[in-house]
Length: 299
Image 1 (cartoon, rainbow, N blue to C red):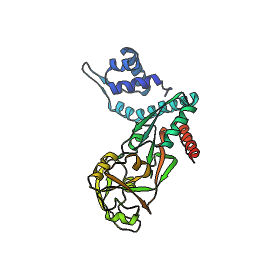
Image 2 (tube, one colour; image 1 turned 90 degrees about the vertical axis):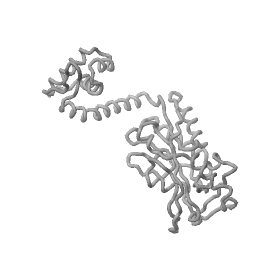
Image 3 (cartoon, one colour; image 1 turned 45 degrees about the horizontal axis):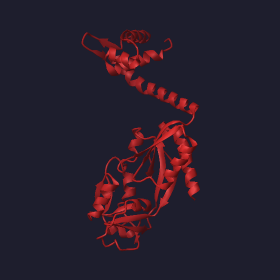
Image 4 (spheres, rainbow, N blue to C red; image 1 turned 180 degrees about the vertical axis):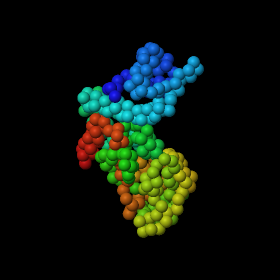
């Protein structure tokens, strides 16, 4: 087969999605007749009809459907690769969308300030992501990178800089018997229903935020499940259960009706910078370096 023409492939893809020669032409900034010409040339190379056109409708032939199914992801991958190479050639610029859960702590804000000073041509956008869906925005490309609670066990995700190790506290209503305690042992969680996490978060991640058993094997009662930290704390205030939070989050969401009691014997809360393996860019790597530098400066 003779070498393919990228313009023919673009015309076919536009027509396959629009199913209208005029709209396909507008999308490609060419005339309707030019779309027809490119399609005929592609069909000539292949040796079969890809599109059926009548006076009322345009539709793909079975062979056209097969070509679309194989061509769309491959063509998108080529375009994405070219964009990434162009980005590297231009250096760090454009827009970096940084997702976060709950609150943006001082280390992250310092990292953003350092990143901006190093790369003034790259804008940053801070996007809150759902507590109940920490990884979904990365998979859906709603953010470029995100600061999330660990653990991270997704094969498609890269766990970058790990930071902010904090002792966890139990958020309880001020009416709860634990409220006036100076601290708790992890085994005492067996006496307190824990508010869990709804939604698309993987089960292993939800279990890490609301364990179902103590290290000694004692079962921990399950409380209601929520989508956001605010919902969880509202249930805490209402006495519907308790919630495990790290110290900075507890301080930020402090409320006179909620007491935060440190828990010993429980793994510390840890944050990590995470991004999708196939969407890694120079911007993300540069921000990861800035976050590591900010953490080192903080000691």
